Length: 242
Image (cartoon, rainbow, N blue to C red; front, side, top):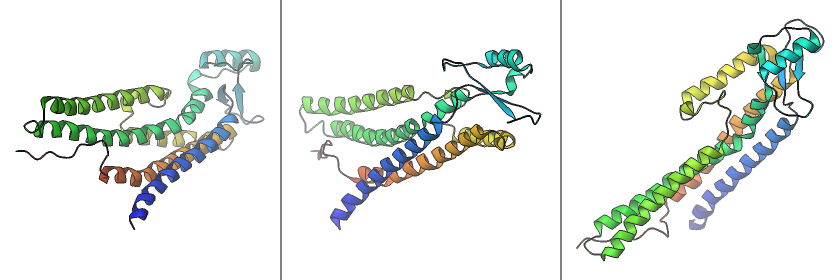
């Protein structure tokens, strides 16, 4: 029974990592099929009903450049606000696994804080029965763990490169805002998804990312709970006050 309690949470950890890896491979396969240019959806039903404007060297193309090229090459005037840049959509799809990793690190950071607080509290509570060096070392160790974990978190945030037009940093922790942004995207693309296969693929990849990474994150929680309940080898035993 004890072995099962130890192996069970570890199994959830591997399931979480495996689920995230499978989702990442699936999304990368869809992402490779997406062009990097600017999409123009045509109102009139002519041919395929849309245009993809790209640079020959594969570099980024902006809406104003795309509008000029469409006017020169096709004789059509399309407002810039009606154009859709596909490169940011590809970028945000490629960041999904990083968001999953950030969620995992956030939970791990809470566990590190628990250990850091234990060090600091044990240092203060045992100051009468410990040498001054022991008390100082415990308190400094707790502060160091806390500081390093915060530094790691800021490094993680910098590691995630989400296009600001999709998710401004001001709203990165506002789950209601993020959910509404996702809903708005699906509402706005309902009309054009039927005739633009690339929009269909973006929507499909987005659904896979949200459902897949959320499932992987939830699978990690039993392992994290086990960490919370397990006595760390790095935590000092409580010192009984004299």
